[in-house]
Image (cartoon, rainbow, N blue to C red; front, side, top):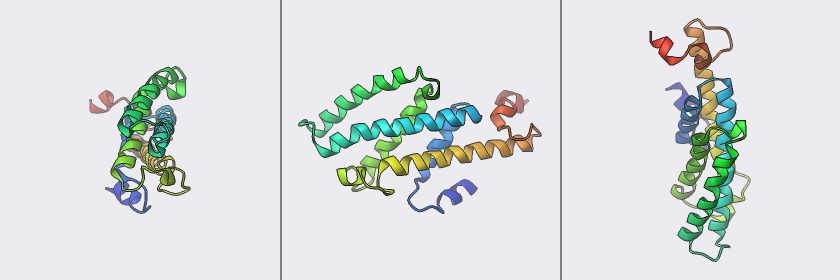
Length: 171
């Protein structure tokens, strides 16, 4: 409840994006290393989505929008897999969370899937609003984990994931 209230204090941030960022952090391991990887992968996914979205929205490919989008996604998907050989980009689902979140924002928010919005220096630009929302969620997940770690009496500064695996906490 507090996290929802907090995110809503920042108009323009995407509450659903924050929840996805938090889930990505938890899915990635829920510790400090997971925070770094999750955020890096989420942002990488957003950047790749922008690289696909701009030529599609600009209609510079000479192809229909559905065909251009499909072909560019087909090119980007293997890049995500190859890039996962880099440790910070190794959480492939987190990259896809960023990619998918970007297209959710672009396609479902009026006037955002346009060259003007994609190049603006505002929260209308997917390159700005989606990473900020995902990072806010991951940060809240990290803070939540540290508070939970303190509550169960683990070492100071550790997240719940670092403090004890879920199976041990459940015992």
